[in-house]
Amino acid sequence: MFTSVSGSLASVLANVDQANAELAQNVMLLKRMKSEYKLDPYVYKEISRFLNFNNSMALTKLANFVESLPTTLRVAVVMQIYKDMFSTHPFFLEMQNKRLFAFLGQRLR
Image (cartoon, rainbow, N blue to C red; front, side, top):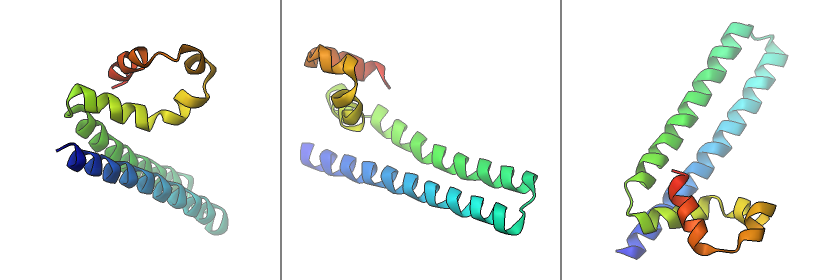
């Protein structure tokens, strides 16, 4: 069971990375359209809002999925998602207490 959940989590995280990359690409294209074609500010704003809404929906689906996991798996996922922050931020570097990380991971949902 753990293996299938781990595979599902890896897939979800990969999908979120892909969604973020697509959002960045679409934003770049939108900016290019704005400058090259003198896109109306209202149209630009509406397209930007649409892109951000679609991206937030993808993240909401991820949050709902993570929320439905048992606590231990939820903590593991949160730790994985925020691993860069945990490994580079001075506050977390000083702590080194895994139980405290688990507690914080539960609160970050």
